[in-house]
Length: 179
Ligand SMILES: Nc1nc2c(c(=O)[nH]1)N[C@H]1C(S)=C(S)[C@@H](COP(=O)(O)O)O[C@H]1N2
Ligand SMILES: [Mo]
Image (cartoon, rainbow, N blue to C red; front, side, top):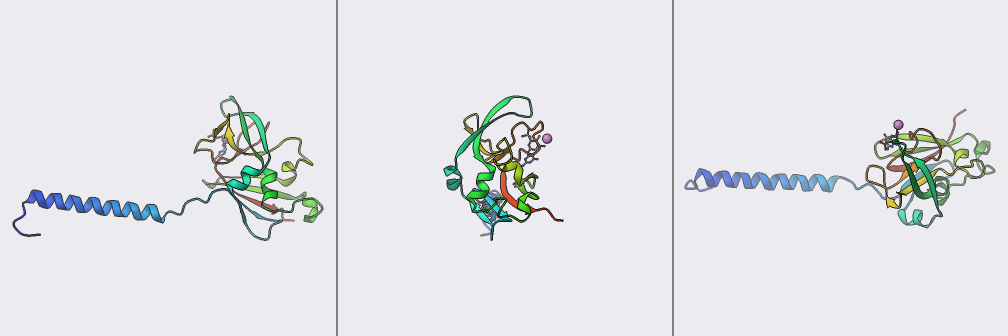
């Protein structure tokens, strides 16, 4: 900078450069953050490798509804697809005839964006065994789920507490219980 520049101009140039640097830093960090892949990942028993079930594939599955109260006792109508149907859409072979031990000791581990997890026995999810449908919901009262819960939330009908209504579901893993 020429020695003739006034301190005011110098301060302005410094401020301008600092802003540019801050902007560059922000742009780099935003670019470095890998976007969360859409859909739900399914892996584990019955699958050779992890499979991502895309939103488009989920949209093609038969839709079902579950009415259940929320944390505050208010009743809501959730809609989505049966969790079991998501596993089979991923290509998992889950019939009792095909799984070791008839699949009666298999469970599904659900993982969320925040690391929260819950498990369901595979038989709890199958309509051959369970009289109720555990849902992978994407709508509540006709609206897409709020960011805090969506895009996908497990909805368990009738269960008194909501601990297994996992919000922001990202992955499902089918596991055989160890002897
Ligand atoms: N991803 C995720 N899902 C979650 C939880 C959580 O901490 N993380 N908490 C569970 C619990 S203990 C409850 S009671 C319900 C409802 O919580 P909310 O009322 O804050 O939505 O979400 C369940 N699903
Ligand atoms: Mo809870």
